[in-house]
Length: 371
Ligand SMILES: *Cc1c(COP(=O)(O)O)cnc(C)c1O
Image 1 (cartoon, rainbow, N blue to C red):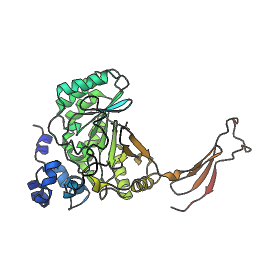
Image 2: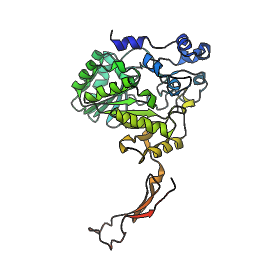
Image 3: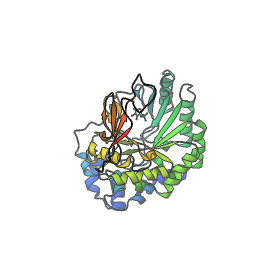
Image 4: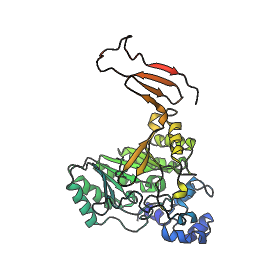
C-alpha cells in the first residue's frame, strides 16, 4: 500500500470520528450521514482551524442537508445525456468519463451528491464500452475524466484508462478534473507524474474554493504536476459563507497563479438536493468578477458560469457594466475604474483613418470616479 492510500484510510468517515476530532454531536448528523457520505482526509482535518470556518463548512455534514427536499437530485440531467454507462455526452466535441464515485473528501455542496461515495472504480467492461462509443464518434476530440475523483485510481488503473483513450486516433486532448492535489497532496507522487506525462497532451483542472486550502504541501503537489508538463486550471464553486467575498476570491485566484494554476471557472452553485444552504445570488458572483477584473492580473480572472439544465451547458456571465452601448457608429465602454470611452466603429467603405473619419477618434467621454 502506498503512503497516500494509508492516509486516505485514516480519514474521518463516521459520526463517532466527527464527535472525537471536531466535537460534532453525532446524533444530530446520523440521519444525514445515512444519505450522504463523509470523508475528511488528515490533510484537510489539519486545515480546519475553528468550528464553522471555510474548510469546515465544505466537509463537515450538517442536519440542514436533510431538510432540503425540493431541489432535484440530478439537476443537470446528466443521466439523460448518458449514451453508455459512465459517459456524459452533452457538447458536440467532448465527453465526460466518470471513472469512479470515490473522492478524497465529500464536498457537502456536491452536484453529484446522489452518486458519490459508492464504492468501486470503472470496470474493464464498462471502460471498453465507453472507449468503443468514443471510437464510433470521430467528432469527440476531448475527453474529461471525472467522477468522483480520477486521481483516486491506482497508478496502474489510471495508466490503463489513459492508454485505452490514447489508442483512439481522433482524440486530441484528455483532461482530468480533481480535488486530490488540494485535499490529499501526498497522492501526487513522482511515479504518478511520470506515468501521466506519457500520455500528453493531458490537462488538469483542480478544485479549490478558499485560499487557506493552498498549503505548502498543496503548492508542492501543483508544482510537481506543472513540472510534468501538465497545464493546470482551477475550478471553484461560489459558496455562501465560504468564498462569497470579493477579497477572499481575489486572494484565492492570486494564490493559484503563484502555484502555476490558471483560474478557469467559478461556478454558480447548482440546485442540487441537500445543498441549498450554500447558494448565493447571481449578483454576488457578478460583484466578485467585477472586483477581480482589471484590479489584478488578467491571468487571475476566471469565467463565471451557470450550468444550465436539460443539456444547456455552461452559460458564461459578465458584469453588464463594460459595454454600455453598441450601435453601428460606436461602442461605449466602461473600464474597471468607471471611466467611459467611445470607440468609433469602422465604416465598411472607409479604409484609412483620417481626422475626417465620420465616426471620429477613440475618445474619453468621462473620467468616472464612481468606483
Ligand atoms: C463542464 C462540462 C464539459 C466541459 O466543458 P468545458 O467548457 O469545455 O470545460 C463537458 N461536458 C460536460 C457534461 C460538462 O458538464
